[in-house]
Length: 285
Length: 285
Image (cartoon, rainbow over all chains, first blue to last red; front, side, top):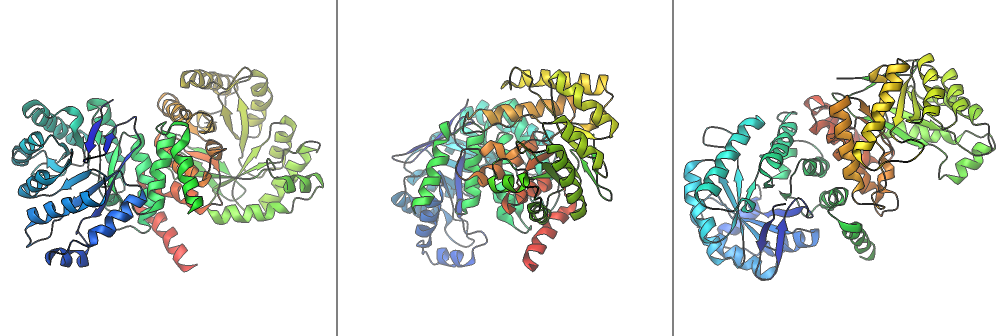
């Protein structure tokens, strides 16, 4: 059973099929948050404090941090944000950027063992980012799409996973347990067969490569009503297909609770201690 | 794709892997309901009216009806209850009893095509009940346990499913699509590996026999806190393993909603119409 080990300065989290699901809080991300974008443009990172607190209280195991705001020095913002978050919590961080320089700046200041978000199967992206992952002894999220397309067929996604493994593991020497595949969860509203394809892709990645997986889980419900209800149902289903972590809403109790219930049902909550303790905690607050 | 077709006098419901999940309301059952038991002992069936209404409003597709109260004429009670329910709703009925005479009395008064609950792999039970299923052209729920044990190992349950199919289909001529297997969902609180064994059993029944399945879903959370949360998570997970119906809580919105979300994610809610319509209905009430 492969374990992707992430660390802050003082805390370790292992992602794996025999471990409780790894909840990666998605909130520290300016996408779709206009006020937060304005604040970041003005160099004001104070909103992060609230986002950290809400996600820690909600039960996140890792925090994603993305500072992708156009017309800013993203590398500087990301490095400052990471330093700030590490002063607020001991949860490990998933360093999230499409800008190579920003990933490097984030890795340079990060205390611990980070998860880099992300590479794709595109040669250029792998060439730029994998040496950083190796140098900073990080783990990396890899998406099975290339410059041409996001393939819908599980078989094509598997081919791209094979390519990623060949390059990341074969050429750059990244350990298999440090490659975390994001099998690409697409909006169900655009195509009601897409979750089936995603879950089939997950099962095959589990069975053929035994790699850990994550996905942007909230994407599934994009454009549909009652998004929380869909998200809370998708995650346990995907967990039966081998999903071991997700970049997700860690602030909505019903969604985190569904993941913890699935932990118990999958045999990853011994004696149901975590489930029972969480119930007790709710009763005393 | 096999369809188990159930009917009332005026309504048809088909259970199948390409259909929305079949929600069989569990409520009309005196087990654990002391007041209802007393009423039934006194011949008072009036509480059924409220149970029917709540489950129809909650989104049940079929209603289970069990009148198992010690020291009563269960056959008479069950026949009266079924007649009463058929006057209140056009949902098909799952006729539920451990008493052969009660099943026969229920089948005799039932208008339509019923689901009989249940046989096991025990010879005597099959000999007594399968001729009734055949004579009344019903479908039947079959549990893979025998007189010796409820086996925990998927392989042993599969052996008993094989025996049930050999006898019910091979000897009594019950169509494969009218045999609905209950793979036995046990309480997770007693053994945290049990849901894994149940889902493995489901996957194998689906892959090896392609039979429809149901289970007493609320049993999974027995003895644990936050039962609704566990039940709402278990069902979508089991649906990924081939479960096509459940005898379940149809009165708790979060549980029925989880099933309808899973319908959408499994491609059984075309264009998401049912999901969207249910959201609109909630907004206008």
